[in-house]
Length: 318
Image (cartoon, rainbow, N blue to C red; front, side):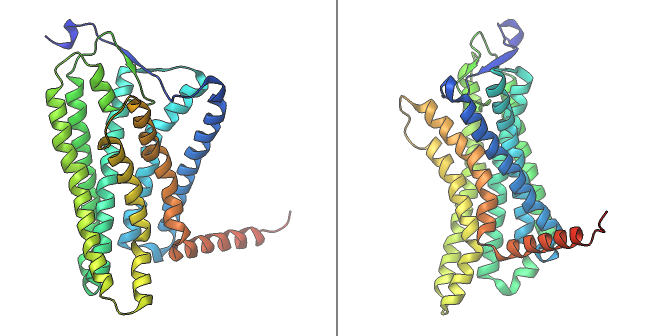
């Protein structure tokens, strides 16, 4: 029995955020500000890395791709949520919902792989500094990024194709602000056992294995740092990976909180809050985390500022 033989839906209804109507304007301004901060902050990071030759290193190469991923990641869900809040419309076409889910999974997985590549970069830099230039070659960095894209696309495409084969009957209300895979599976009137199996196996490969690699890298890093006799050397080593460790904690902390904490009667609310953390809050905080205590980023920003001031001061008066 195919999808055509059952009552199907052409669109879904997104219930959105659990907020009161009188709070819509306040939350709209809040989330719009957060989204603009995310886009501008991450684009500034990319711009500085591209502009300053001192930042043309493997660590900042991965960081620029992470910043681009965060812009795309936030753009998959937040603009649609803002439009729905402004217009009051809750509908999203079937094709649009499936596309949103595809890109959401794509950039979620890509974030995981890029954070793993950055952890490996910090491991080589601290544990094998004499071989860093040789190991972290331009070819390897490009290979890691391309491999991350390929694996992420394959994972996302697998989930999307398996979802597209399912039938959706009369119920079309999604208790979320975007087309989440788990929420869509709850609405299907087909057998979803294969989908659940793939979610478990791919989830282990895409989320759990990279997290294990990151943890192993930092165990080795900490063991190496503890052998450094100089306090200044320890502080310098910690400063190079502190920002990355903060981002990893934010990213995986919210995912673990969503999928491993026991469900309760307000599980939908918990899922929405967790999703907000890693789709809106974390991408917004990443530029601040990587720039607040980063001397290289500060130096690049000062150069751009001074060049801009010199350009405007050198312009002839009209």
